[in-house]
Image 1 (spheres, rainbow, N blue to C red):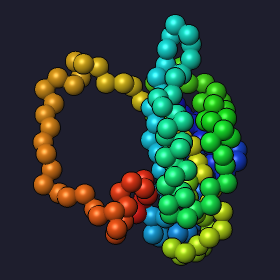
Image 2 (image 1 turned 135 degrees about the vertical axis):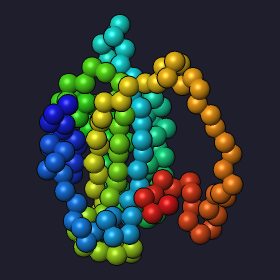
Image 3 (image 1 turned 90 degrees about the vertical axis):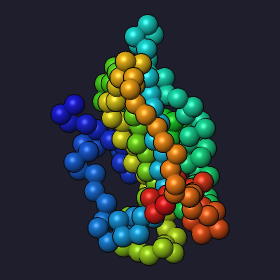
Length: 159
């Protein structure tokens, strides 16, 4: 897609026009929360089905709450924004939604003004069984960070 639109701060804009301040808490400290959600195109119904949308949006809201970010959009409004940006892009294929609630303007970790959000749908083919053949997995020796230091249940950029 040559001119992808993303939903950014209340409107659909070309992705190259969506800018966050370099001195913002998001850019400086990773003060943001995010979700990645898959959507699957069904040619029989000519619709994209988003995988467990409500569960992902509920987790996004929970992450905002745990980090004390003031999320200005309800789950229901966010669902509408997702629908709008997908339709405006004209996707008729599998997609990945990248969503981030972020703090813009200058600030620090204790910035309390309302957050904002972007929703970026991106074409993303599903993996076929043939593609997955021959892949291997391993168990990492790394330990998960402790919930008392940086809660890993929060999908935060700083984590």
